[in-house]
Image (tube, rainbow, N blue to C red; front, top):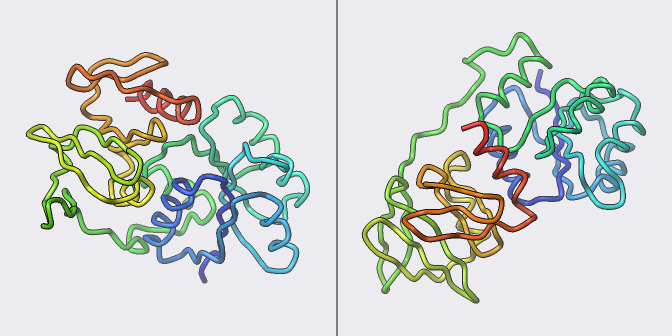
Length: 231
């Protein structure tokens, strides 16, 4: 029997990562995704849900308050970039607490807490991909992840900076980030995606890659610093 899941998170990138992880586990069935807690509450009141992957900080109604409203009717796995919410999350009898950004292996541990009978045979491994193709100069160009330094977003195109050169690509940042492995590439600013393996030094304000200082915005700061501190 599959576990019926929903995702509640106001960040599109976070929802996309969870959708990918859920899709790779055959015992999970994604019933819906919601960008705020009010939409999720309306769905829950009219549908059966087993597991909810719930962000904590959201506008209007927080994840913590939604958990209080539903009163343990659904198994909850909190997902957030803020470690300080962990204690309150467990006080609400959450199954687990995933600190963003989290790996697929860490995600699986949460599922095993919900369903201890889950084994590796229930997981459909995704093929290993180490590159993408992008259209530049009227042709498709192969970009190896190991050679990609950072991506710079401009008005209606992006610049892909690699070890060897810089390519101009007419593609949206929001679309491009979904094609990159989430454990190696992070958006740290509305105009920048970086390869975290190429970061030489960092502060709260910027990361340094190949002597270039790339700014970190407040929106992405907590998630990035938390990731780097654990690296």
